[in-house]
Amino acid sequence: MKQIQALVFLLLLPLGAAPKPELYSGTVLAVDEDYCGRSADYLLRMTLVSGSGVNVVLVLAPKWYLHRRKIALRAGDQVEIKAQRSLEEGTLDVITIKIGGKMHTLRDATGKALWKPEPGSEDLIRNICKANGPGKSGG
Image (cartoon, rainbow, N blue to C red; front, side, top):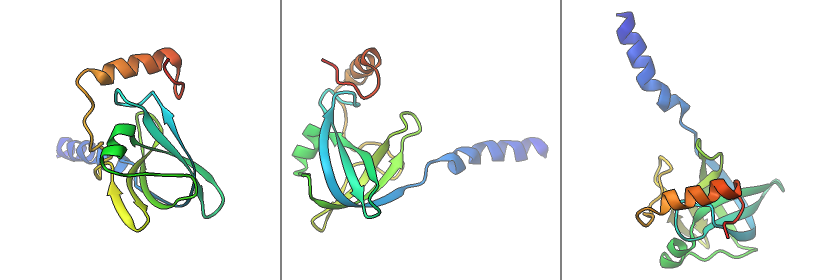
């Protein structure tokens, strides 16, 4: 019986340890590019000034994906964000973003990106990022 209880506990542990979504709203301060993403293209990050005046850096998506979905962000835009902290990288990854009354989904509820990287690009980018250190551009 104790083995079954331990097994149930171990199976439920990841559910309790999953990061909870965090909600932010405010004004876009800046949108910038970072080559150290999960794609062969630049990953866009956004700095948001929340209603309480705190700056929050959020990871959006590859530049090409936002362009294809016709999602344009500029400094001064008012947005509402649902984000989730990445356990692997410690970043705040945007799940949904509401701009100008329109909701856009970038990741599913588990935080998995809705875009697909080109085959092999994840390993290439990961190696470039390791060589340059986190958050530094590879080039």
